[in-house]
Image 1: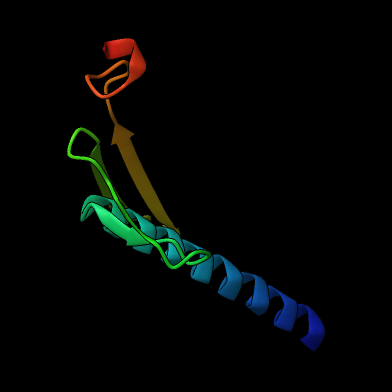
Image 2: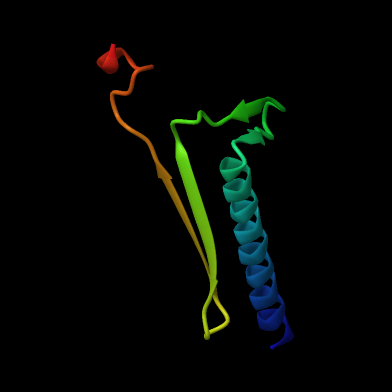
Length: 82
């Protein structure tokens, strides 16, 4: 039915938009600053936080976004590291 095709298309569009939003977030984290859309506040990522991301396209037509964020627990700026 046509309505089933429309629903499938809408689901695909929502998945695409969500993926693009997450890719944008990964890029902002990597660049060490992003704007919180709820508050409008710009947030900076400390240099002690390491961010890597990669976009992989699969043969099935799917796209995989991998984001890795690492930091040291109990660093110099935390109460545990003091």
